[in-house]
Image (cartoon, rainbow, N blue to C red):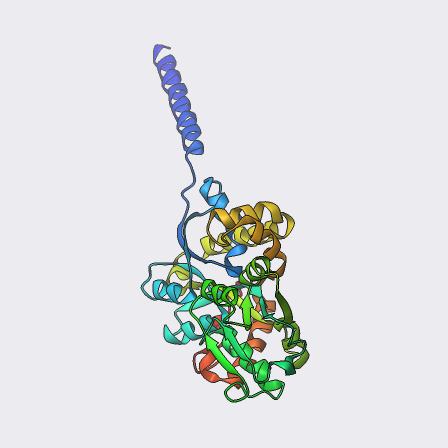
Length: 329
């Protein structure tokens, strides 16, 4: 009898230990995948600020290390050196990088459509034909802005090498300064710099929307200027974490659309747009979107074909194959 009681006590103790261990285990935090993400100042960075804030509050599903850069070229270097896992870059640059890395990156989603406008400090331009003979300043040499500008001019019977003078500068800040000083009378400017210029200089006006001008000559789809890419090595080892990132990223972009005031404040906080007041005015013009999977492939492949036909080097010398596009099964 004593032995039975002893065995019963041992069994009860074992059950209690098991239950206690189970309770302790259930309260242990789930291990999160660490992802190094590069965001860009300007339109392509606007959609991610809500996720940056979520990460800062330690409520994101993955653990993110964000770095904000001034130019896509910086992002390319960090991707190539494996210092970053996911990065925002220009769409044509993503195609070029796909070739450069021997198919070492995959395009996850398009995040920005057309954001370019022709601004004039004056009253001489009202139509695309009025650009003939003008000196046009812009950023984006060797990237989407240059190829878009050249294509639109050419399709409107304006030779970009003979009928106009194209002056490319390194940064949007430099472009703003040139317009403020009066040296640049006509410029193609991306958001939010375009809003910044018009806010600072009341005589500067938006005369042409390049998305509209593109649409007049090309029916292959919208301008698709910004995207997010991932290193394939990281993707292959962390597919579930990448899918979680895309879910959180989409939610961040939707929050951008539904709460402009808070997004504008976060844009200033994280250095995406210098001032909240400018951000609030610029965000509606930034064409922030989330397009992925088959729709992304259909629309972006059409856009890249136009760039390739105009200048093969604009997309890396050849069009990317189907493996470039992330379409999870």
